[in-house]
Image 1: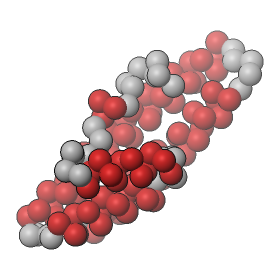
Image 2: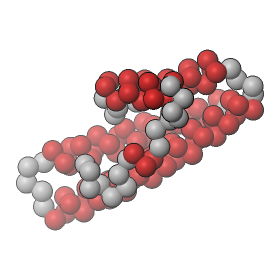
Image 3: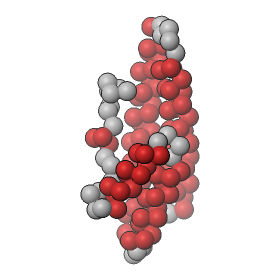
Image 4: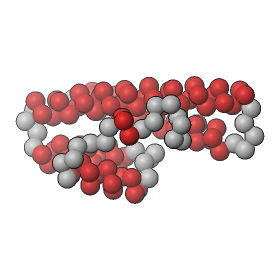
Length: 119
């Protein structure tokens, strides 16, 4: 499981780097056609990294369940993922943790736009 957690950390770092790049591209006032193509490619990279993170998170969660982890262990793992992600605003982190701890389940990829329309 430690290997999966290391993989998750690497992917999360890559996700953050791509998200920052997208943020910079979107902040540009005068976007050229080339900029728009770069935005689209960067958005696709974010989707890819998000899908990888979701997959690895599921594998880690399953490994914790198989290892008979306590609810506290499961919550601690979830809280650390959310806490360490610098792309999540503090308000969103709090809302996510409230949702998860109220047994409404974790946020799903359906809450993130796949085509960038809601950026």
